[in-house]
Image (cartoon, rainbow, N blue to C red; front, side, top):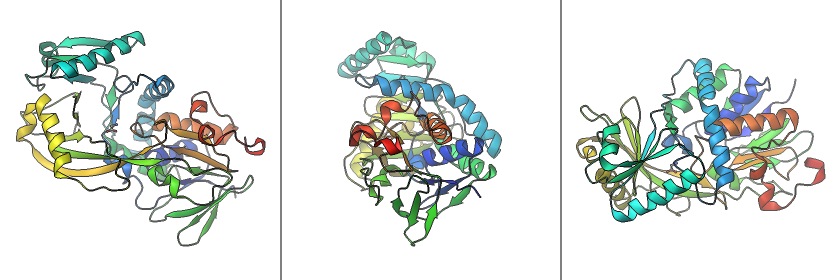
Length: 378
Ligand code: GLY
């Protein structure tokens, strides 16, 4: 029997990679420390927003984000077909709004940069923004309209991906934390906390913020990933409140889902693995949301939580062969895990299948943190 690829971590990156490997005919086992799809990715907002989130110094990452968005519709269709579930892919566009002179100056600078990069964005007055989205409040005096940015319901996606992975014949081992990796050119393996050793043809580390805690990766260093805490709040939309677009303000974003979830985020805090939800965090989010979309005031609160974004040292993902034989890394997706799932999954599948590090993932190699990859494992 052919050894499967072993994926450590059943978040959006692990599940999507498993799904793509199976679609390519490669047997795959995913090990998750809890239940697959219930970690960081479950706590995200599901925005697919390369143009909104373009960074002044991050054009390589922008290209990757953009490419992944290009692949998203086909990926969503494939996941829906395999799982029989809807993922609520929405292409309604995004409004970036400003509500005072400082925020107007900031988004004007962003708009000019977006234009310089050739993005298809429009500058709107406050009234023009309200014409597009009537729930934008009277304080909003300027906006950027980003038609090309989309969203998905990350929770529906994760349930669908888990189902799709199983439907394609994948093996899913939940409640199975991995403690150690045994790198090897021929037969790399993982060792679970229970001491079980599981051998694969390759091992893929997709463990998000927990990637750094895996032992045994020498001669490679553990992926340098740290948690960045994001507190969020979920409201329940109720008519006549019927927000249709993602709205990004100076202090909060709002992402409305078709089933009535309204996800508001997010703080950005260097607090290690702390996931406490604080009064101050929620206060800032609610005030930031209310200032730009005042109708949130009357909505019921469904839930609050804090997620941990897996951030690398340069805030770009870490994807590719590590210096440890037989070990591939796919982690550090920080704010873009849901967006980057198709391109990561497909390019890791290509790497497993052909040995080729494609031009899409080459700039994001783990080698940038640990020096060149030894000849024997390149
Ligand atoms: N991508 C949204 C966030 O990180 O809050």
